Image (cartoon, rainbow, N blue to C red; front, side, top):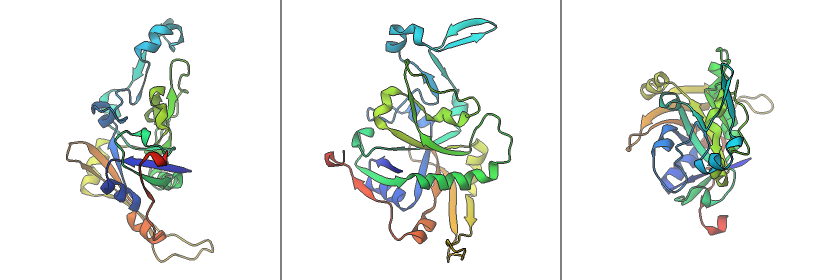
Length: 253
């Protein structure tokens, strides 16, 4: 499956193309103000706009407490919870309309993130997790509106970062996400997380290089926190070609 990461600059596109992926804290996209498609105050929540619930109040989801039923306009999480999510946003469609200020798109593949999920979740698999959270996850965003409510996420809490109102459906968004504590963020800022494994050919012969993946954290010039996966050394060994960079124009739609 092909995915497209839209960027405003060639410098960012080149870093991604060699295997450096920066995941920004989800609160960034709640707090920033823009008109190009990045800002969404409803991140990590289910919120129905006024135009919907005033016209179709009977379509609002029903909650109950002590036998008393009520309608829900919005449900969500507080900032302290949301700040644990760090996301890398892409699209399943090669269309510059996904993010309005994009000048470049990097062509990626779903198996990049299958590999990250396999490697990064391994140390956490034995921990008790009845809520269904995942340290690292990826998948398509689920779009909802008042007529099409999102699927329940009980036991699949990792999906809370993959819900968006249908106003953003044109983006055809695909995400990868970390769910990381402040402790993890602070630790890998000083000592990056390193995963190194021997790899073998199909006939079980060891290859001349290892699979190496690094995770580190930082704060950018605007004060936003991020986690960064660096698999560039392995990517260069496994293939001499970087991921394809596409210059965004009307001809790419």
